[in-house]
Length: 362
Ligand SMILES: *Cc1c(COP(=O)(O)O)cnc(C)c1O
Image 1 (cartoon, protein in one colour):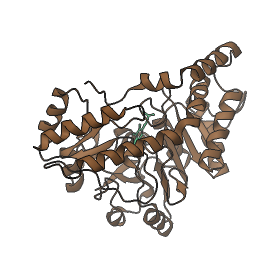
Image 2 (tube, protein in one colour; image 1 turned 90 degrees about the vertical axis):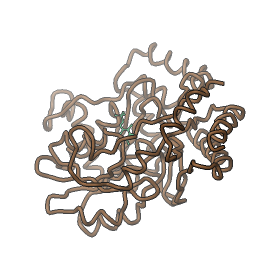
Image 3 (cartoon, protein in one colour; image 1 turned 135 degrees about the horizontal axis):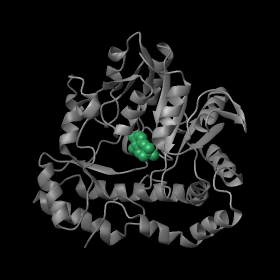
Image 4 (cartoon, helix red, strand yellow; image 1 turned 180 degrees about the vertical axis):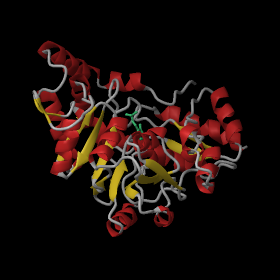
């Protein structure tokens, strides 16, 4: 049996007629940027997330970059973030001119809150937690630290669509949150897209202008800007997908439940720590092994594609080497692979993945 890590075609086929219809409508209308479809999609996301403002932008990186810029973060500033994330998190910080300051992770893969305060300096302007793989950071603690030290908290929720912390959706707890609609994310576009979530009307207005060439209206400019608009076609596609998001997340949780049941006692393999702070949305399902490379090879030999994309940590990467040690993140990065967990997986496929891993443990 061959099982890919992601299977975007099977999801398309499960909703094909509605997607085709939505795309056709945009093509017939001839409005490809802005327009009613964008407004409607932003409105639906605002309702889904329970937040006042959603601003559609070109991708998740831009969403982070724009928020940081419009919070006034730039040269000489520092932003505290996790050592373990996709590189876009660090890039968004450094592209503003600010310096990413990394913190090691806790056993749940997310930023270790007990180490945040020791990294605060007079230059620190914000904390940027990342809800990695769809699991909530300890937002109570992070918000407390942010409040006490007067630092903005910006949530990178790119991997956490629809996840919660208590009864709040991730991305709506800090000053602002961002989502990425990169095709493989829980709710992926058919190309690039992202958005900013915030309750702050002034910040929302600034972000919206900045993302559209600094335009207040047609020939009236507030400030410098960039071009980071969401395509109308992507909004039309995402509008269809949003209606399925909760079902998809539930299905991802069911599959994860199956993995926990089957894999908890396999020798040499460890499932992830789940904190239960809220609903997980399992962007990926990570497992750990001392013999990671052998496990990876074993999976591939048996036709199961697994992820090994975060086998590095940010402070030991390209431009971000800082000479510090991040033992927990480094340890996790050397042992992790991620399993397919998309909603379209069949019962037989899930069982097959489990069987292959079980054989590795024998
Ligand atoms: C996907 C992702 C991003 C950026 O998303 P793009 O839409 O690809 O720019 C940012 N942060 C994290 C943690 C991500 O996983």
